[in-house]
Image (cartoon, rainbow, N blue to C red; front, side, top):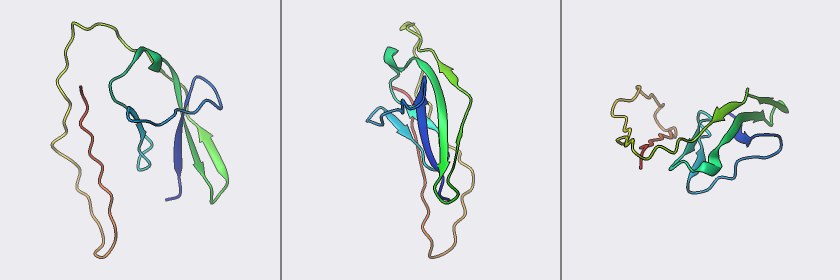
Length: 102
């Protein structure tokens, strides 16, 4: 429960600056980029840390190569079926919903 997720771009310690286009889910560690730009090109690595056990782990680098082909138009990717979510009465629950596309 105390895991923290951050993403690196190309090398340590160049962490991704979060802004209106880039978001890191603290639930699953996924990096979301809205409206990919040419400057997003590079090699990404997830950095996971746990303060309670003072341990950190890096993932393998994942290359991202933005495509400049404007002729292709993709519809928004909206998930309408989600896995069942269970919560105990009186406890808090956080649900995340992302609509991908432009």
